[in-house]
Image 1 (tube, one colour):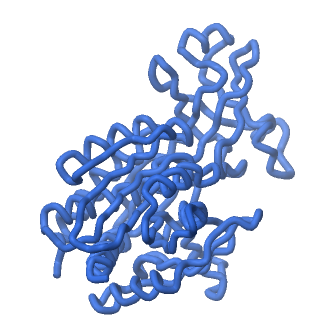
Image 2 (cartoon, one colour; image 1 turned 30 degrees about the vertical axis):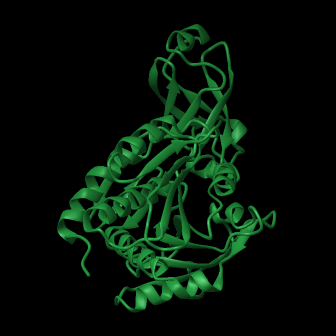
Amino acid sequence: MHFFDREKMKRKIAAKLEQLCNLHGVSGYEDEVTSYVLKELEGYIDEVKVDPLGNIIGVKHGSGKQKLMIAAHLDEIGLMIRHIDDRGFIYAERIGGIRPQNLFARTCLIKTEKGTVKGLINSINPGRPKAMTEIPDVSEFFIDAGVKSRSELENLGIRIGNMVSINYEFDVLGNRVVGKALDNRLLVFILLEVMKIIKETGIETPNLYPVFTVQEEVGCRGAKTAAYTVDPDMAIALDITVANDTPQIPAHEYISQLDKGPAIKLMDRIPNGAGMIASPKIVNLLKMAASNNDLNYQLEVFPAGSTDAATIHLERGGIPSGGISVPTRYVHAHEMASIDDIMDTITLLLHFIEEISRQ
């Protein structure tokens, strides 16, 4: 079954994803993204609520016996202002996986109660007269908003505690999209499209819980509380994975590759030991959904990152969990993904939902 016209979907990806990526939604302050998603969901689900932490929990009543939770996180990495000096230079603390090497001469967006203010990030020694011999810590970078004093900044509404997002421009390069916060607005878009297609085509579903989570980038916090509330029979986390198929990387070190299809997660972890080994049953159902419908897919073994499934699978008495990932280059920087991989991820998720409805 063809769920959508691919040429129309390509145009939709470019238009809708640009809107989503350009929203300001650093962890804990996802309200712009929340408002967008709630509006997009109208008419496509049976129930929706926003829980006390900020997760959006939707319900689509199905014919199957299973309760399936599908999670995609709303938040992005960024910075929080921690100090402003008398000359108006701003210092910030990282929120999530910000890497210092991505901050040099980078424009940023400071969210205030009065609106958004642009700034330029740089370090103490960005070049002349003193060259750098090593990458400085985030604490050595500052934001220059083009003012002369602290009072000028305060007049703009800038205060300690304001959130800062990194300003990567959205664009379409050939058959690829690039922009900020593809991690994870790309999967938010995919989950929204899946819910719309289900409504428009009337395909069979289990009792479906689309959940848009908060604070994933700082420890999968929203997913933990949402999973407790939903108490599903099984869960899928939607996220990006690293596509490191770039020059000078040997093939045996690839996590995933662009244009090879969505990645079915087998395992992941982060240095503190958190992570997930995917439920073999879910892995097999995902493989079956792909193979039965002639979809390309990859298998993901990811030793340096994790997803919302890391906390979901440990809730209640344990929730069998898995993941579908979109291969993405330059993660947590100016990110790039394949339009074909995006469309194939939508298709795989829809076929997987159909498989679960038959269980």
